[in-house]
Image (cartoon, rainbow, N blue to C red; front, side, top):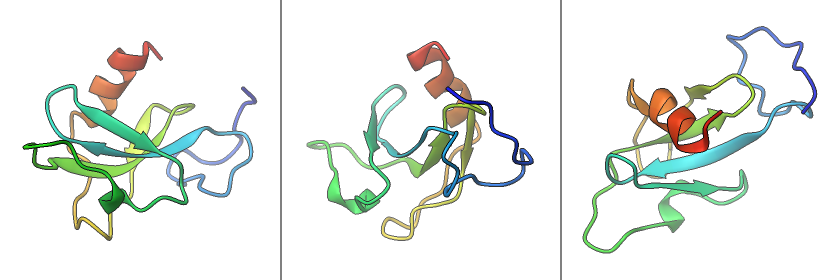
Length: 88
């Protein structure tokens, strides 16, 4: 992957260097990742409630934003759990 030159506080949604995906969290390690054009509320897991949702920047290991369709935002621990799951 290319190195992103944007400030870490910027979201990078339009960045061509960073890998950004939407996600919805259902359990401790139950995450579904989506391309940016798919709304967060298009996914569900049977009998599981959505706990958090947002965007994840794989290059910066950072969650950001929020889900307008689910009215959820990332939880504080999401970045670290995703990093461990993907061994980033």
